[in-house]
Length: 66
Image (tube, one colour):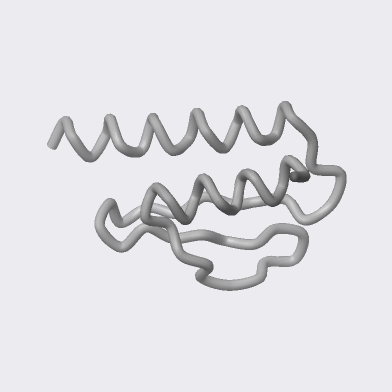
C-alpha cells in the first residue's frame, strides 16, 4: 500500500472525513474534534505519513485536554 493510501486509511480510522479539495492538498475534517488536517496530493512519502500520524495524535491530545 502506498504511503498516501495508508494516510487516508489512518485518517478515516481516526474519525476524519474528506472535506474538500484545496489547491495542492485534500482537506480531511474531524467533526468530533472540530479540526482539519491537509493531505498533500503529490510527492507523498513515508515522512509525510509520519507527519499525518503525529498531527492526529496532537489533535486528539488537544481535544482531550479541554
